[in-house]
Image 1 (tube, rainbow over the protein chains, first blue to last red):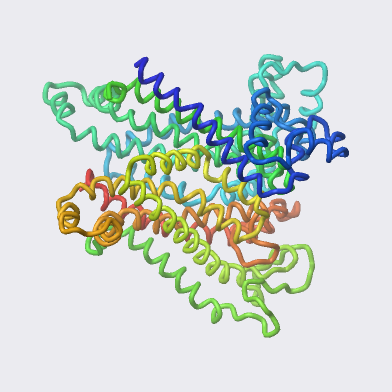
Image 2: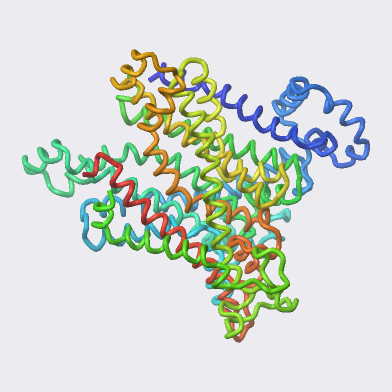
Length: 341
Length: 287
């Protein structure tokens, strides 16, 4: 396990180097004046544009520029985001908990429902429950999040006026940013409970349900399908037949024998799920006007806030790479065949 | 293969949906004739400039969006846009993916290493994130959306083809060609690629549905088609201001979201139903 871990971790610096090189090379398509916001901490510095360009070698050859910028980002200087009206590092700190809270709220039910439904669908293959799960899967794939999100908003906000867009109501917003509220974690659901304010918890939950449901519907399809096909493969294997032949209870055969092995590909696909959630967050947050990384990135892209775009891309790539790493390590952990290779 | 498709009724529904949309795209000039004085058929005609959408009527079968863009016209010509976008993106991504994937797989060595590490880097991003970044830098427009999605889509095709070529190039008929003195280029283009390309072509052509969703998403985010262009994503984004109806009729503007949304759904559903059937056929584990 240790050597596998080291080999896998040794790849990380190369991927990080490649990702930053690719992004930085893309930005070379823009003029030095437009890229200056990548280096400043305060928008007032941009009035002395020439000196910023001079100081950070923005007209120098690519390697010099890249090296200057890399040194900057390694100490956490990511520039100033005009759309967030704050330095990029602070913007990430402000938006990330919101996105993570949303992703987690969608992820946990996806995992539970996906595995449950996938198992049942495999056990009752070609019966009504299986058809139902396929229906969920195929519609979940085909209904884009921006369509589903708008329809949900029309019904639950427009028609019934119970689940509003945004992250909190105006009263909650005022209270959260007052001295009476301590933001321990940045997760509103958790902070409200830690502060003992149940009404803020309800407020936050009401705002989370629709975007989380949108993400959930799109990703549960994937997980159900993977669990189902993996389960179907296991059920027909010899050791399952042996277990049945020696008289093990059917529920134990399914839950203890088959499902344990069937979950191996499900665990790796949790990285795919993370892709789905991270990609989905970009659109979902925009529809529901939910102040997270995704909405910030889209705003930055619309208004050509270069520092914002770069920050958004770096955060997404980091999360994505770490997600894949976690999946690989989990895979090696649950399946000894992987780590012995 | 067609015989096996016929056994799956759902895949036939999928095929039917795609054929239907293809016909709509082909017959767009007949189904929604352009106004006599219009220059570009992809620009949706406006019936006045009133801000509120109007419901379906005999004059506007699907109603109008804000600024009075005719939804029916937009949907019909948007079908053409969807096919155009989907086919262009897939062919561009396939061209790059096949070229680089076959070079990597056939020659191996440092070329393989460099190309595969490059695909690793592109695949280190969620596709939509990298596409958003590329479009933002290149300047928002529909052609840049197409380019951006093609740039993030090719690595998976390159990898798939490379893996297939690795096994094909070990086969006897390839060695026989080499023994007979054929050049690398001839072996690669006449023997190796034709024998390895089929799965990639199938996977890629079934990706048209998801590629169209991504393009529509970028248009929805305001990074794609300009205002008034016949594009489904754009039509959906025009409904964003009309989620709330009046107090007497809260769902007054349902058609602005349901009609373009339903169209995208059916289009993608068609590709996914067909894709499912093909995946079962190609998957050797499910016989």
